[in-house]
Image (cartoon, rainbow, N blue to C red):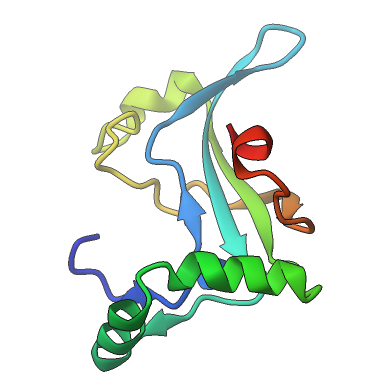
Length: 133
């Protein structure tokens, strides 16, 4: 993703996220499922152009944190939808790539995104260290 077509994220509210690792979920019956997690911002994904990035980042290196804090403070609560991709561990060797390799992504046409939840940031920390650490 070093030279991807997504550009430099405008701020955290407009930035998707995903885990590079594959995790294993185990249900009550002991059945294992491989899973990858994806967060997609409900307000859409936006990027800075090169000249904007120089201006914004050069003027305030913490602009993304400030935008997040100010959005929450003003009641414009940032929200992300949580999706997962799942795979039966028995299928692990059926592909021309190693699904456990952190440098590989799972194709969405083979492993569709399944919406499972959401995250809303509705309160800024009052004490950074006690609320975050």
